[in-house]
Figure 1 (cartoon, helix red, strand yellow):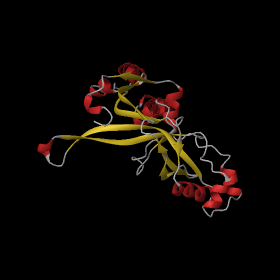
Figure 2 (cartoon, helix red, strand yellow):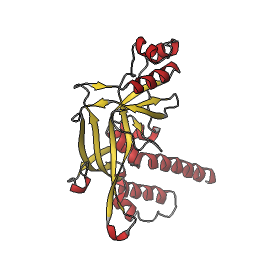
Figure 3 (tube, one colour):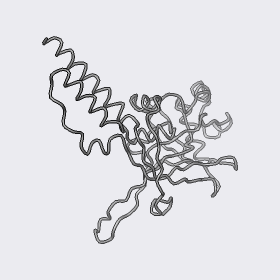
Figure 4 (tube, helix red, strand yellow):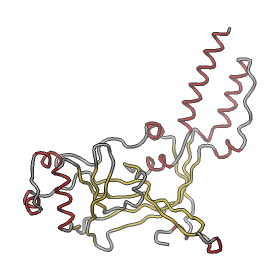
Length: 256
């Protein structure tokens, strides 16, 4: 009997851990739902489309310069939505099933889910998406070209940010009487598929050798591999996350 009870408790614990990860929803799920490749990470919340970055082998990014774009090349789309985990929304039912199972095992039922059930499986996100259109042309300064050449000569990929997911939050100003201010930060980016390529003569103009490392990195891609946590990838593949749009407040409009 004790062995059976121990096994039941173990199975219940494993099931609860699995359920915990399956029913979660957070900012990383928004990033996955919107199909962004990489979280911006600490220190990179100022990255924007048009920025040229070095992409290191450990997936860290370092901005080195930016594209010279036309004034109308940047496009913003407001975003104010709630993201819902369909499995998490059924939490009250799951609690009831768990209590029935506990009753079968002679254990007392868990406490009612209460407020947890009311808000389970939901995450709200406000901000905007920014993208760039390079069909009208995009240039690089001479200094930017030389930074790209030096990075490529070291064997580092140099990539352009094509799109960014930008969060907008209203925070109180330092002077309480002054009200609130809108603060934005980049939470995720999408990179151009191919690395930034420079012809051999541009390397020479920068005094940089166009060696094997630069030749190799020119053949590599910027958007290979998954940069999101495994549990986020799992929820996305199981299609557990849905988007429910809300009317966009004027205070959340880009540039407001």
